[in-house]
Length: 578
DNA sequence: ACCCGATTAAACACTC
DNA sequence: CGAGTGTTTAATCGGG
Image (cartoon, rainbow, N blue to C red; front, side):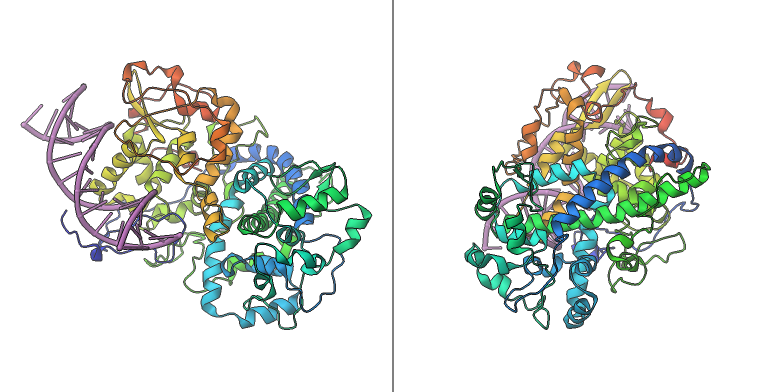
C-alpha cells in the first residue's frame, strides 16, 4: 500500500549484511504473528540417525581432505620459524581485515601474537571482519564436502597467480622469495599492513623456504602436479614446479582470494570435522558400538583453534553481530536477526546431507542441497519459526530452498507460500506483500521454472540458471567468499555434483526477461549443457519427464503431490525442512 | 554517478 | 464475478 517512503521500512537486520541483501522488512512493528508458537519441532532426529551413519564416510574423507588442506595452509611441518623483520606474515597481508577471522588468526599466530594483534585492533574492525567471516563461514561450514571444495576452487580460481600467495597458503613467509616481492603486489602489500603487523614483526609463518624445495617436497606439489587449488598443472620436477608457482600463482588478487577461501575452507572443515566426529561418537555410543578408532578428532573444535571456535559461539560475538539464537528463548530483537551463522554443524544437525554421494540410505530428497540457507535454517529453524524476524536471505534463495527441499523438488505456488509461513514467523503477516514478491521472483528469475503437469503447475529450480545469477567475482574481495557461499556458489557446487543427473538441462524461460545475465559466465556453466525445457512459452511440452529441476537433484521424480496435500500450513512435518 | 540486484507495488491477463 | 496464479513494469534502495 502506499507509502513509498522507504524510510518507513525498517531493516530488521541491521547487522545482517550477508552478501545477500536480506529482505528488507517493511514492516510495521506491529506484529502480528500468528501463530508462532510452538515450536518445536523437529523430528529431525530419527531419520537423521541413519543418515549419520553415512556421514562416517564423509567424515573420513573430510579428515583426509582437511589434513591435506591444512598442510597446505599452515605450513605443516614447517619449521616455524624465524622470520626476518621484513618478512611480514604474508598470509596476514593478503587478507583484508575483514577476511581474517579469529580462528584464522589463532591458527596462524601464536597466542601472544594474537593477543597483541587483537589488542591493536579496534572494536569496529573486529566487528567488521567478524561479520564478514561469520557470514561466509556459515556457508562453508554448511556443507561443503571435499569435492565441493575442490570444485569451488576451480571455479573460483580459474587462473592462478602468485607465488606469494602460494607461500602464504602454505603458511610460509616471504623471506624465501625475495625475488618475488616484485610481484604484482607492491611489496608494500606484504611489507606492512598495519593492522596485521605484529608488533615485533614476527611472522607467524613458518618458514619453509628452501628446505623443502631442496628436499623435493612441497605441500603444493605432489604426484607431478601442482596442488594449488584448482590448478593441477603438471610439473616434472620441483624446479619446474617452483617456476610454475612463481609464474602462475603470483601474488595477485586471485591468489589472495584463493588463499582466503582456502583458509575458510580449512577452518570450516575443521569445525565440521569436529562436529562430525562428535556425532559419530554419539552414534556409536548409541548403537553400543565401540569406536573403532581412537578419536583424535573427537574433541571437536579443538582442532584448530581450540577454543576459538567455541568461543565464537559463546562470547565472541561482538556487539552487533549476530548471535545464534540457540533457542526459542533467545530474545528476539528486531535489530539482530540472530541466526547464527557459524555453526558448522548446521547442516548436519539436521540431516541435510550434502549432495554427497555418500550414502544412499535415507537420502530422501531431503538431502538436498546444502546451501547456506539450509544451514542457517537448519540451525535456526526454531528461531525463524517463532521470531518475527526477517530471514537474511533473498526471496529467490528462500524459494529455491523451499523447492529443493521438497520431496520432488518442485512445489506449487501455494506450497511455496505455505513453506514460507511455516518456516518463518515473519511471513505470517503482510502476506499480500511477500506473496506478491514470491510470485514476482518466480516469474522474474530464470532459475525458477514453471512446469505444468496434470494437476496444474509446479515450480522447479533450474540450478544452472541459478548459478549463473551471480557472477563470480573473484577479486579477492571479501565479497568473493561471500558470494560464493551465499547461495550461488553453493549451488554451483551442488550442481556440479549433480551433473550426472542433469542430463536434461534446463533452459528456460522467461521470455519476458530478456535480461541478460551476462556477466556471469560461470565456469560451471561449462559443465552443463542446457537443454530446452519448455516452459512458459510452450506449456504443452512439459511432461513430467522433462521436469528440469528434478533432474538436478538426480532424485526420484515422483509425481508431484497434489497441491492440496501440502497445503496445510502446519501440517507438514518439519523435518522436511531440515 | 552509475550499474545492478533485490524488494515492493501494482497493473493486467488468464484460468477455474 | 472473484480468487488465485503469472507476467510485467516501475520505483526505490543499497552495495559495489
